[in-house]
Amino acid sequence: KAGVTQTPRYLIKTRGQQVTLSCSPISGHRSVSWYQQTPGQGLQFLFEYFSETQRNKGNFPGRFSGRQFSNSRSEMNVSTLELGDSALYLCASSGQGGTSGGARTDTQYFGPGTRLTVL
Amino acid sequence: SQQGEEDPQALSIQEGENATMNCSYKTSINNLQWYRQNSGRGLVHLILIRSNEREKHSGRLRVTLDTSKKSSSLLITASRAADTASYFCATGSGGSNYKLTFGKGTLLTVNP
Image (cartoon, rainbow over all chains, first blue to last red):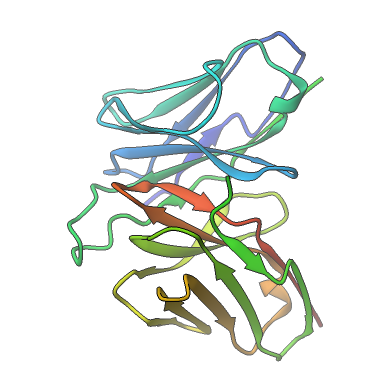
């Protein structure tokens, strides 16, 4: 199976602009999560989508939003970019969660990330 | 906020030696996962241990989990230069296994 893919891999924007990042999960996976990684804050959870619905949300301002399409592909959008938004944005996909003791479907598989630089 | 805290923050060893990294967390968990990251790239899943398990093995990796102490350890045996990377523990808790909380990681350097 192909892994999680993210596009673009690198992006340079200026303050005030907006950006859209894309993630294609592993075939058959329905859950897509997004994380932000910075040197100062480390890896932080942004949100998770399952069957086109946002199921979990982290503590990020409303400038960060996302969506999921019927084919499970997901996009995240950051509006009014700030310098502090410079980060590696990672997407992870996971299969349908099983019950406790069930199949190992809650493992999250990460893509290579999109490196966003805000100037 | 970071739930997991890895210890040590950095570890430098010689090829062939064993490397042990520790992770502590604060709240009850459903499972704990270890990931590897090479120099700013994506995370590679190494192993998942559920809250009702105490030890798991995968190749040269051994993970232990002590829920009473809220801690886990990752042992890499017979290390290789290719093991040089940052290692993170991540916990899934509450009603969701899909919202992972990561520690700040241990930077492992294996010298040839």
